[in-house]
Image (tube, rainbow, N blue to C red; front, side, top):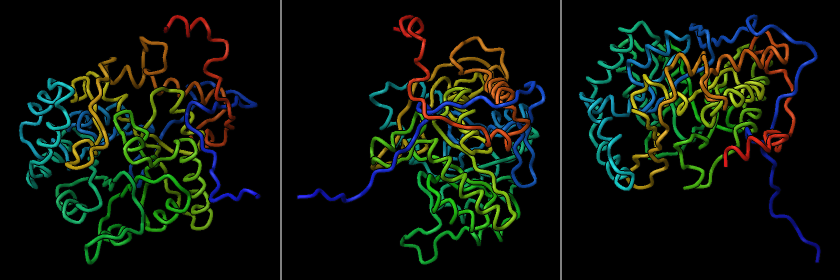
Length: 380
């Protein structure tokens, strides 16, 4: 009897399976423009600090702004539940691992306070930084009003999986196109990983799109529920939607790869895959200035019924300046992200990120190991 296929499995690619092909021309790295534009805001570097409590505090937002990027504060996190957020973060950092999930579930059951939302946004603004905040779709109607009244500059509506079509018990759930009309600031939405969903979200009139489901170092979504698409394929799919949408409407909407980037090389691969920028969590959690005290944890970690994340010990590698611009004390690509990006742009002859997106990716799953036997032996 002839076998019949129930469904076809599509091949998808992650960071470790591809490499960037060198270009036909080269360029001095200092000539490379690494900037990112989001609405009316122009940033010198294409990096965003993720809306994770261990990564972004009001103070860290100021540090990111001084470095040329920006950070996103989680409006549903420790900073809006507790006035003494630093003390809570200290407690998290000293709790044994076998007790941490229970602690998270207790700490994050504390109600979010409207007054703290306003206070934290004011603290960000006092540093001179662009104030960007994140909230889940189900809380956007209420929190967005407080945030806008407090002077927020960028609104991020973010969940593990976000679509333009969502069924809920609410009579009238969040309609992104209505939110865009009501709020006169850039709205970034995520996360998604496929062409069709990306296109539908772009059609809502949003100003930026986050790409990635479950790739973060502290996230266990892929393990717990089995959902996710490797980041290179997800970025290529959503970049295709951005290009088709731009060609049809003339409106360019940047897409931002979110999660899974550990090194400068992976940042470069994400941009070549079509991203305009990248949102990083754990690399910034390793900065001296980060509020997590050498730890990181995902936004879905404290779920009361199905936690999808864990606290990880990421250590402290150096200052934010060293992580972004060097000098690097390590040879593994985890410091001087912008230096790595500029060097890559020089090797492929890209004067800006839009040109970098035109570089070629090749399937090369063994390229990191080729000729590296002594390095492998040294690590073992």
